[in-house]
Length: 155
Image (cartoon, rainbow, N blue to C red; front, side, top):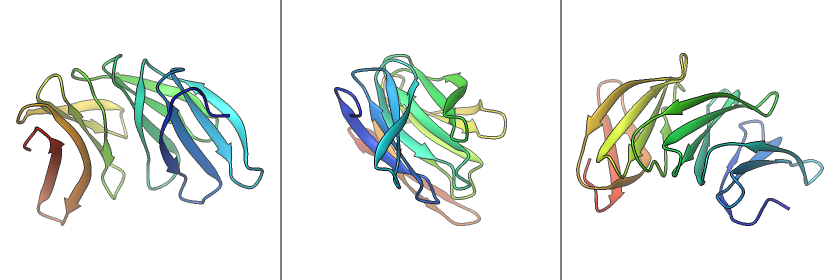
């Protein structure tokens, strides 16, 4: 069982594990796909909403909407290796294809925070439209980043 309020899921690049957020229990459940069983639960911040795993599979980033933070899970040990304070009410996130940055819309702050995955620090906070929420859809080329936010926000 993955908790009382399972939400978003993410599969590791090798397909060995599935990570599931649970807003009701402040946890992320880890499922081993070969055994089809929960093998770990990781305590994160209040109301974990979204999760994304780096392309190399070493870290999972989790938005904690009511803690105004992002938890970073080491997927090798299934422990939190960092908690990053960001703007108000982060709901969703997206990791760049090279795994170097995480973009997090802060719906309550009307901004988008950029996290450097090498240092797990916020490197930029950019003001955007009202209540950006879902920026999981990123389009990249070597020279341009197009960030599309859904809900009432405009990025």
